[in-house]
Image 1 (cartoon, helix red, strand yellow):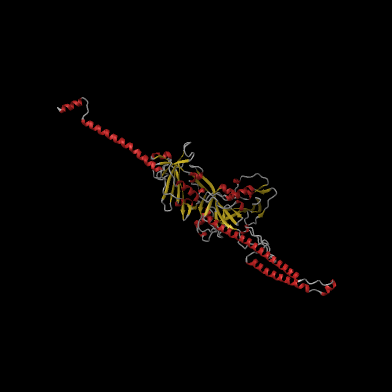
Image 2: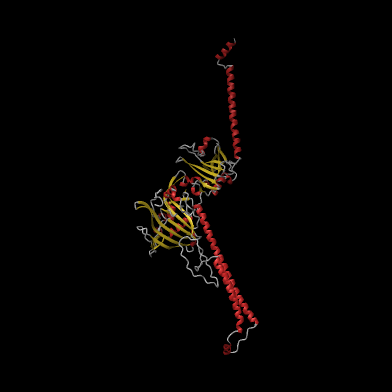
Length: 611
């Protein structure tokens, strides 16, 4: 009977008890899923709100913690990463990618680190990895980047000296707050912490996150003031490989040597000497040439030279081989090192057995008021490949032509103004001739009258002169006292009655006057002695200061080949044809200035030194 009732229910289309139970379970399960979905977003929202209240990098509290800074950029057009790193080594910041060249990193590092210290997010834009490309915060990881990928950001990483990461931030696209919003036109960017998904909007100045080589080095290479230039020598020569007596030799082919003086008071250049050499006979004496009535100095180019020296920019560096002294002399063992000599020759410099170094395209010597003399030697041409910021714009690649440059400093005492010493009363100056000085010297300073001046000589003579003057003064006093009682009686008789003897008061007054004159003479000698000593000591201080400065400069120059662009090279490498022009001629473009030299190609091979 029961079976008949169930069958009847099925036939009428009704639901069985089992079916109803199954449907009930399905409804309850769907309700639980819906409840879980509703609760989950509320938990995530609370987590984001808490994140907004904290700084992004709590470990980074002080700039002094930083031991390295790395910036990695991605060039989408070239599909390549451009890492840039500055590291503190032995307390000195260096650039590892440029042979550990010293970096002037304090300002930029402080600016970059300050951007991350206490950085707080303004908004949470997303926490989905799928949005990283949209906001441009994909990490520039060489293991994950593929050609054609977009949305790759710039990685900024700061570590301490132990190598522990203090901050790793991926900087993405730029965003500006809508007009009228709080903050106005603040520069905002999307960022995310490396290894985390949330994308934040923060305020950050990315102009300090530069990867330009020139922004991280000492911009003033020579550290000189253009107004302190006293003279310039333009030694225009070239080195050429010639065959003589069955073997290849290097010959120095000198064209001209121009010596110029600069007067900073009148801001005028003058020609000191102009030597022109015979290119067909290197042993012939040079011809001394003067400017004709229709010739004049091209002061515009000379001023450009002076100003370029005060702001000499380099585009790259390379480390020199060991064995060269600070004043660019080759040690004896250096010439036995084939690899070191080859390094010099490939860059256009030839070390000689005498210790001197010649360059393929001449040199410029610049003398300063403080006695420092810079020697700039110009080597072979080269080129520097620049990408990204160094090339001008992200995505660009450029090859900048340049020139190798060796720089050294030396002290030339003849550049200093000699102290003007007053002649000491009662002292005969020695008659000597002041020697002519054309090369750096460290001899005793000379007086204006040509006599040698040292502390032991003149001051001992002055003391002796004091004694002699005192004796002479006493003799004068005694003569004045005895004079009335002496004399020729016959002459007195002829001339009339004898003069009355001076009174005791008159004799005392005469003695006092003689003593006063002697005292005044002694005081004058002491004054002259003190003034001469002061001037001499000031001069000695200038000498010591100049020598100290030379040591400091060579400490910077000694280890490096510098590379300057052809634009800079054209300003600081001038020849006779560049600086002498027709009188009244129009000003020429200094960038067009050139010089005689060997082919402008890197790796110009010179025969081994000594051949």
